[in-house]
Amino acid sequence: MNLSTLHHTLQHIIPPLDLRSCLVSVRGEMMYKHYRDAQAETHIAKINSCTKSFISALICIAMDQGLLPEADIPLSTFFPQLTSDPDPRKPAITLEQLLTMTAGFNWDEFGGQNSFPRMTRTEHWVNFTLEQRLRHKPGTHMEYNSGVSQILSSILMQHTGMSVAAYAERYLFGPLGIQHYEWEQDPQGVHTGGFGLRLLPADLLKFGELYLQEGIWEGKQLISSQRIQRSTQPLITVPLPNHGSYGWHWWVDQYAGQDLDENSPSQPANSVNHKPLNYYYARGFGGQYVYIVPELQLVTVLTNDKRKKEKPPIDVFPRLIVPELWKLVHLSD
Image (cartoon, rainbow, N blue to C red):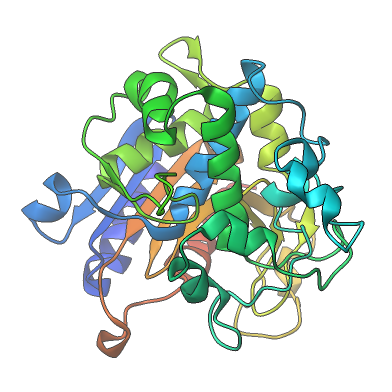
């Protein structure tokens, strides 16, 4: 892959979009950097649901340390009150089903039931989520649910003996050199699992590079490579209008030359013999993303703060960047 060509292409694509930031590293070296202004580089900002992937990382670290059991452990281990739930399936929901959002709860994040806003207006977010009836058999259907992320955060706090932020400072933020952050809490003082973290774009890039390097940072294994691999593989297909699959609070997808504006996964004739480019990513509302493309040793961070009325660009990476990466890879074939 020709990096100078890629840099030139990004310089053509990114500035007109008026993103808050776009950072691209290849093999750990910053290859492209764009900030809307100086403040975007130096001020922390909401990463929204990218917070979920940080919770996933902390769950993995706690498992590595033996503070949490393996992912097939039932939810009733952490919340014994579930054994008296009228639905016998609920206590058997596993930690992995929380991580893959396949717990089966009757949940509609925004719109319809507006489950997420309703949760944030209650006095006990975790209990609100646990009390929802099951709509699907656990493990069979991915339903996006920030409530299960709050359950995971609560489990972390319960089993590490410290707040989630303090645990992150010691075993993730500290080693990565992340010094500036803010993290919201629920009424019980549990740090928000599904949103609420504010970080610098450069620190999001470090997080992506940690995953690219399979959990190693400056020679030290912060997260075991086995858990990195498990948590970022496609474990469940996501429902429309989303695309691709879901892992442990990470989105997983691939690009093989297809037109993303088509409903069918048709590919141009010249792409048939080319293998797809696989990637996984953290995703936050309003344009916050961390993309990792292992084959290219590439990490991309995108952040934005525009409102809907300002028509922020959507899907910048899958629609504009990954097709260029794919072309660069296959031009040399």
